[in-house]
Image 1 (tube, one colour):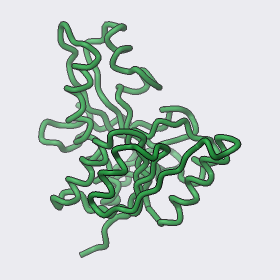
Image 2 (tube, rainbow, N blue to C red; image 1 turned 180 degrees about the vertical axis):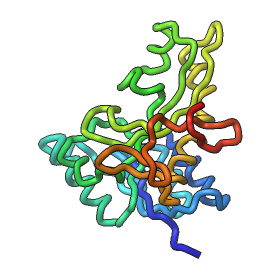
Image 3 (cartoon, rainbow, N blue to C red; image 1 turned 90 degrees about the vertical axis):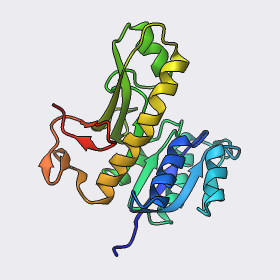
Image 4 (cartoon, one colour; image 1 turned 45 degrees about the horizontal axis):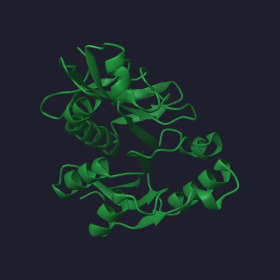
Length: 223
């Protein structure tokens, strides 16, 4: 059997996306190995999830650094030391400095709770409701220095229901978000999804539009 595809995960909060990745890996549905789970918050539940599964962890406090650049460069130097082929930002709530992002071009993935390019940044569910959107969702994209601005490779969509609150919308989207991230990481681990100088590719061919999550949890080309 081929060696597991090595990934590191960065998370700031509860770690539900991390938990989904671990569950898929343990079930044999995601051929990855976790080199590290790192956080900017020592009390992040994501770290406790990683520890419970025997995954190495790192808590690095930004307050100990003079600048954001200093922190990001040190963080990613420590991540690089574990030799991941891919870094997954799974609820990592920091804007990364361009100097830290650049060496990871095509090797860093983020999941964001909106249908990018709509609603970059925070409070995406509330903003979708305030705009009167009929549809909401989540996006996976390769990370660039632009906040939530890298090439989008996959999305999950849900209908906004009458009377939805931001909390209800978020809760209904979360299970799809988990499946979306697992499926996207799986395509990269299989060598099928990549980013080159001309943009994202799937099976060596240009990916003209984000893949869409199907009801069976697989990703497919947009209709």
